[in-house]
Amino acid sequence: MNQSPRAQANAAVEEFLSSRDWSAQTPARQRILAAFLRLATAKGFSSVTMRTLSHELDLKAPSLYSSFPRGKDEIVAESLSWFTHRFAHDLLAATEAATTPEEYWAALVRFHLAQQLQRPEADLWRLLIATDRVARFLSDDLRDEAASWLRLHEGMYAAAAEEMGFRLTRQSAHLIFTLLDGAGRWAAWSGGDAELEILMDHAVALSRSILEVGSGNHALA
Image (tube, rainbow, N blue to C red; front, side, top):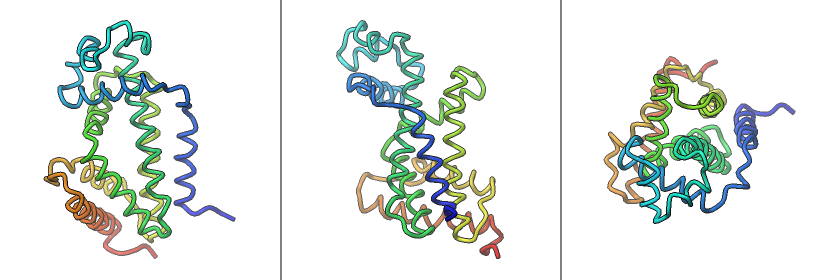
């Protein structure tokens, strides 16, 4: 039996996740990565040094280097990869309960918006990826990993659109991702759960409108 577009998209994400083994990721390394993301998001990437990071964690510099011998460059690379895989893993889990393409689409949008508002390090991820397009400071492997994830993420939306009878154009995909990535600038979320639910529903409606307009205001025959 042929897999549905959604099943194929999810299988591709599962394959992506299996490409990296995080079983050796110790609690100490995770704590360092979380602290780096937190500091870099709050104060700016360039302001975070091994000294400021050790102060934030109340650790001596040798303890940091014992976990990350190559210093800040290794922490940056690991943070980006770790964030990518956690986002992909949690997004996949968020779609598990969806039984229709409409529910699947809504799950994608709701998760993306909630992550954007609740995890400000998502902005740092995009900033570093955008900066690398100019400065080319990331490794080829890390750059390829980020690009692969962006294609897979868009592919999940395209699969839902196809099953709903629409075609997700590159322009529509760009507009939808811009809408969700920029939620911190338009949502004005005060932190309440009920308000977040309203904002997520609003984002689903807006994203569906973009999809439908981009497909010519009607489902494909």
